[in-house]
Amino acid sequence: MTAGDVARFLTAQLPTMTRKTAQMTACALRSFLRFLHEEQMVEVALADAVPAVAHRRLSGLPQPLNPAQVTALLEACDRSSPVGRRDFAVITVLHRLGLRCAELAGLRLGDVDWQAGTLRIGGKGNRIDLLPLPVDVGRAIVDYLRDGRPHTTARAVFVKARAPHTALERSGVSCIVALAAQRAGLGTVHAHRLRHTAASRTLTRRVASDATAEGIRRVV
Image (tube, rainbow, N blue to C red):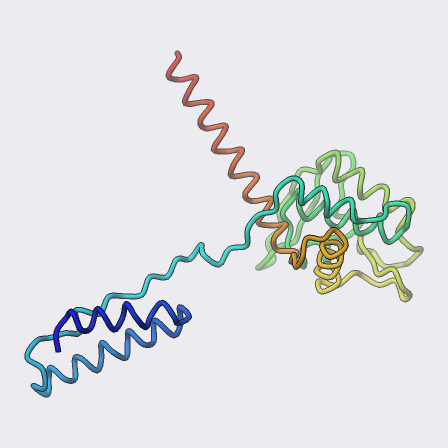
């Protein structure tokens, strides 16, 4: 047995496996080859010929939605109905501010400071973030509060459309996005893709801003 034999085996087998299975196979083969060498069944230490299986952390990230897809998602909400106004506001908040489903579900009426134009968001680990309230987000929320939100004693901003009108749960937020995506013909779209879309948009703007600043420095 040679290093070439090991390489040919890995080249033929690993591409057909999932990442986890490929990692386990490579680990098992490395241990087996080390055993063969220690038992003097092979002359060469072939365990070193087994490379580590690459794990690209970003490969599992969802693809951001493009502007046309976001528009289609929003237009799939019937804003002439109370439920449609709620869904439109939910999707607007998610894709503009990049909130998690739990953060949006936990949003309370007192968390909206209309005078200062801010939202108080309760995040993971009891963390509190103060986010700016964009005009389009505020308008969508106001439209829902005035002509879509049922009369209820619940203090949550977004509540269930059916009685009892309790706070919208995290699973309900996810369903709103998924159903709107189906109506828009976008296939399966999870709420987290809106968060990733917001993050990608922010990163793109930051890169463009940095590039502009660098261009100005070069001119100066």
